[in-house]
Length: 401
Image (cartoon, rainbow, N blue to C red; front, side):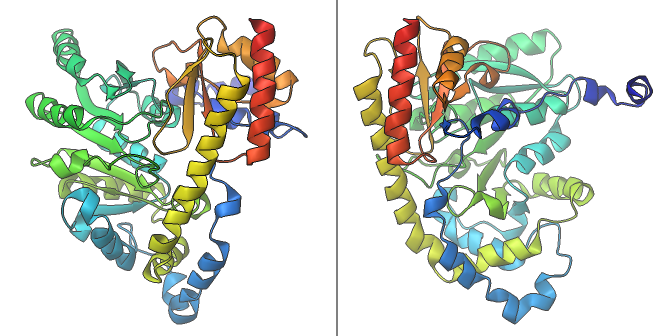
């Protein structure tokens, strides 16, 4: 049977790579396991009662909501987003500049359909979100990776990379960047570098995919203007989601961009899933219309700020100081740690024996690297679990040292 199937598989199937995080779910679900692996919101903060209230839209509009919807998205939700996002976008968007998608990964997928041919190149941070690069790679992309520091991607390195790549006959199509509370690094892309990135994109005729799933979950510091708000030539596609500010189970996200690009993404979406669940879109809209998004978001931010602080405190209490490096994130979901003397894979194996799990750093490097890095999510575990889990991690690290 396997030989028969191999004769039918597409070339893409032979190059297919699964998500390491999804593949390890069976491991982290073992009884007694404390997991800092998946980037999951805390279900304890989900606005269940408010979302139940939003379901009342079915009483008024159920016959419409239960029907097929437009691929572009549920118009009342798009109109709400046009108003609500105006401060971040720098202006009120037109509804045909917005596309509602089934999760933010679909934004990456649709834009890849629009821009990527097999053998094309994408510029991204090193490391970067593995879900996005997996999707792009499945479309045939390769990657030019740019190192980062506490101020995000070192954008000054991009021109030389692009020029070298083009001399070698490579087609570089766009820049992918996670601008706020980077996944996995936790850093922000500085204002100066955002401005520089726009200049580079214009000079080298590149598009920018500005991925900002965590931007509304800021704990500290002033908000940095979006790259989209600085764009005067329509070369930025901005991506965001309700997963972190409401709940991931809604599977409702949105992107904003040049009308022509949004239209082409919409046509590809017609063939992917016809439309995002109208029921989900309508309930999300009603939740927002009732004022719950604005009233509940500060509670989410405060809840996660306390969780970040608890993990930071546990790091300082239980990890061998001087042997572990990390940056304190000003928002978002993640810490990124480095153990210069210990390989993360060895630490993971020892930690799992003690029933604590994290995500290895290597999958976040599309061109290899990260052997001494790992990602820790601080939002899901309880304060007590965080205390115990970091204590176990500290024991594992000391044993290896």
